[in-house]
Image 1: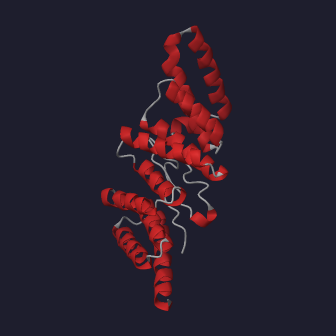
Image 2: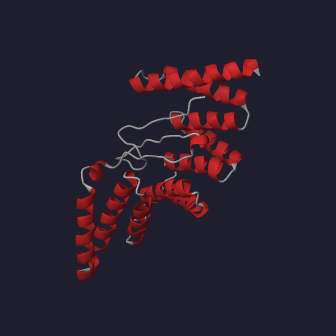
Image 3: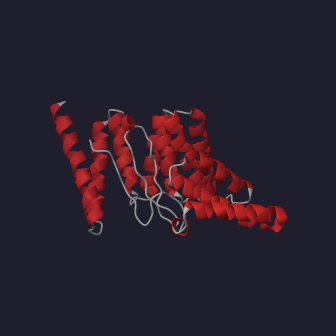
Length: 244
């Protein structure tokens, strides 16, 4: 069964309005190293890490000289923390985004990026505390912006694979699909979830429904790729069901 890859474009790592995001879904056998690999806010992409670190240094100095600059310092921490996350430097991302929150940047996207960093570091180090922090971060992000589907998706992945709360993970993916049928990542994840829990008929139904959705969507190279992936999963499942 091919791994549900999925979306990325204009973005690649989750969040804001300016940033749409892309999420890569990895099969448990390979770990979930890169639960998400965010594309990024254009504003951040335009700056190098050295420039952002220098900006933080300047704003830290200004902060001590003039307490009114706290908001500016928090914004600098946020941009630098996101950049670290893009580079997959999870610990610096966690440290810097935590400082951003301490300096007034407590919006949904900061918590979301922080959750991404905790989730990835937790998987790399097999650290359950980091996974719990990631779940808390996704939850805070959703409290601030309930429509942040990528945060909900991240929760589903973590509950299913890391917390072994498989029914909860399945419920979350079903909920995403009900609200946003065009969020194709959730279909691939749900199909994989059912497959791994031995419910191959339900997995087949998920992929068949997804194929119909893709078939009625506007044609594009990406949609054709997803349809092919979906078709491969359908054929594999039909083969396994007929021979089992």
